[in-house]
Image 1 (cartoon, rainbow, N blue to C red):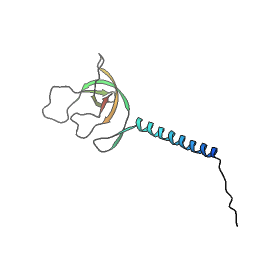
Image 2: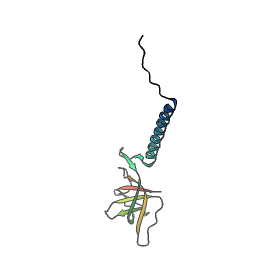
Image 3: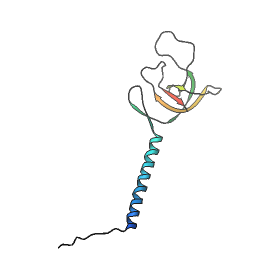
Image 4: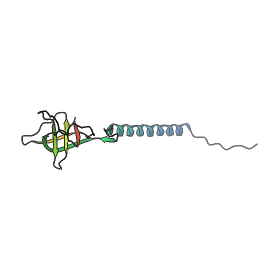
Length: 126
């Protein structure tokens, strides 16, 4: 009869291995959860997915210009015009300084094809 060689791992070593595996799984789950919470995604009007994060825009306060011709109201939808000439709608509260300068932080989303105003995107103030 042939005797098989067996290797016995002690209970203590098995416990260390199991504990190590559990700690690795907890660390991995924590990293994935943190990444998921810090990087939200949203689908724009064009169907593409855009990563959302805080953006700070500096420029001057401006009234947004309507798209196309036709009747327009006298109301002023507030926006911000940056030094590069880009114009963004502002959702939420933003108060310009006395010299009409404005610095706003929020979530920036690209403009969709069905916008009412001539804008490059919308900044949602937190």
